[in-house]
Amino acid sequence: MRFRQIDKITKLEPGKSITAEMTLSGKEDYLRDHFPRFPVQPGVMMLESLYQAAQFLVRATEDFHSGLVLLRDAKNVKFASFLQPGETLQVEVELLKKEGSLYTLKASGSKGETLCVAGRLVVDCVQDGPPNSVDQHAAEYIRQIVEQLKQVAMV
Image 1 (cartoon, one colour):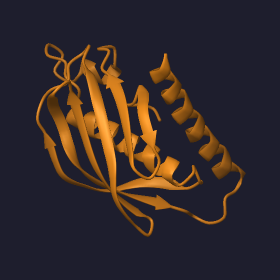
Image 2: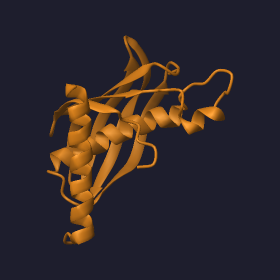
Image 3: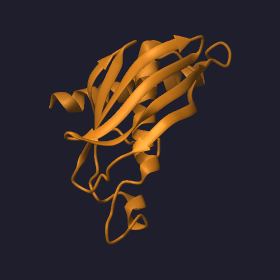
Image 4: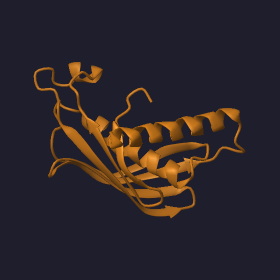
């Protein structure tokens, strides 16, 4: 992931929910062009935070099997407030239902009590055949990222 939009995972219950955080430092490259005199997190990057947390939840639910977790739909997405440097986006994603390879999730991002972004995500956990060594390496890499992000929360 070039732009990892999750700094730590504070709670992960496979098959149920994930809670994560992302603090906007102000040093992010994309902030140079996104309102230079009033830097704020681009809405699409806040949505990316929700999607990345949803990916981690789905992967943990699938016991980190190989394959892709693709965003198929973002429904009723609402952007309610800005996120500025120094502020932390608290991301919460809840699994609502699973139908075949499709997962429907309720996701939101807030700073304190103020909602910044919310919506429903539909992701597809695509298995493209029997796992090969590259798939297994990728699955282990994602598992390690999740463990590292959980460890950050414990410090």
